[in-house]
Length: 248
Length: 248
DNA sequence: TGTCAAACTTGACCTTGGTCAAGTAAACCC
DNA sequence: GGGTTTACTTGACCAAGGTCAAGTTTGACA
Image 1 (cartoon, each protein chain N blue to C red):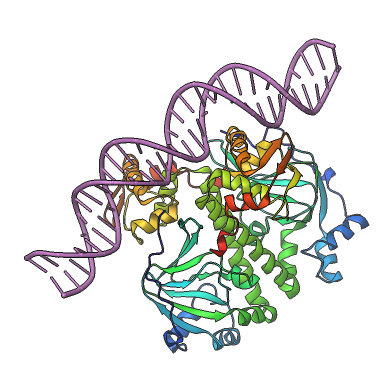
Image 2 (image 1 turned 180 degrees about the vertical axis):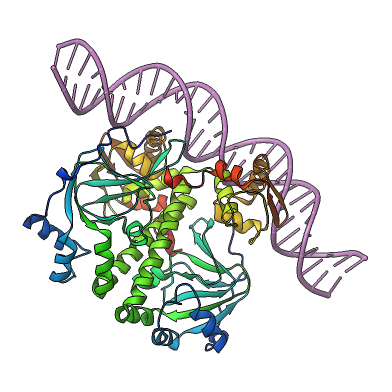
């Protein structure tokens, strides 16, 4: 019965929401998703948008609530947590700066399938869902950007499903570690961006198992000391977790 | 080391491909995805499309190949199979009549993440990927239909990930069975649409485990005799597998 | 109708990862 | 600096599901 959410859910009031500063607008319009779009489109989208802040542990929204806002993460880390009725929880995805999320819920006007939780202090831009939908109708550039973005994201979920069904917990942990660096050979020392409860949730195991798996991975050159991981040979680890099985 | 694919992969030549008959065109234009679109759009999409047939066991394409055709299943059953280097395989999705698949690979112009296999004799319509992309640029109705379709499909994958991480194998089997009927109460007798190796792959377990789980599910009123399943009380089964956990 | 192959089941055993409980280490806070 | 909380680790045990091997049943086909 892992509890990833914690208790300190503080729903924010509108006093937390503010109009966009020039700085926010600059950040926003330079994001991968939006940087290709024209000025008028950006202006319309941000017209009724708001910036909100959350503290670590805050809940942005709960599974089952109606999806009204497209979320754009300006700063921080957000985890999407799936919960079962027994109280069990798992982290389905973790987002970082510049990522757009829960588009699918907004587009289908369906309830959120997951609860969003701030893993660190975070700043988000919220764009009203109906604004997005009407803009999609008018702007084919935006539509195409949305299609490509959804399709890419879709493929990461397919990879996730394959990993869950075909790989062992230690292989998934290794994949998580490989995901922290773009490098694929030689050695590397990294700071873990999440605490170990979060990592366990992301990988789909219990924290106790995570501890033990880090012991196991020592034989593949992985050394973990508190928040720091050293990998002596990325090639060896890649071979162990069979990254790139999609090309088999 | 389950082998879901089997050996009899018979790549089809172009002799299997034919132009569309009037009948095919009618079928095609009545599909949920396309029925809202205008006549000119349909004509352009089908201009260079072709109809292909496969026998049970045939491979449509392999994981890793470049995605060139949007696949529309006119008739039959297709399974998307993910493989790992050890030879392990799992069925990520199963499609039936009228469903459109591997759009994400076509849209991103990336290699297929899965191998497609005909689970029964099947007929498909293949639309060239570049035709689809150019049509998306021109036609905002098509774009919107694609966005909604991708978003819906996206949400089924999210549910799948949640189920894999939060539910037991027997709950997933129960969910699979519940997925075979729209009914949610009373009793029902159904014909299993797939053989048990396929079901095991879909649920993410071994065939041996499937046999045993059917024994387990007897206590929830599930009786399986060869290809037929009887469920005495769908409500009980739904409670067991906690369908609708997304609303927790 | 007999034969062969494929599909499915069953049993014995093993491995992976979960559970529960206790303990240590680090962070936070007056 | 002492006390509390939170994060993490370790150990002993357990259960779910996988593996291997041996059946049985089914179905296709000669």
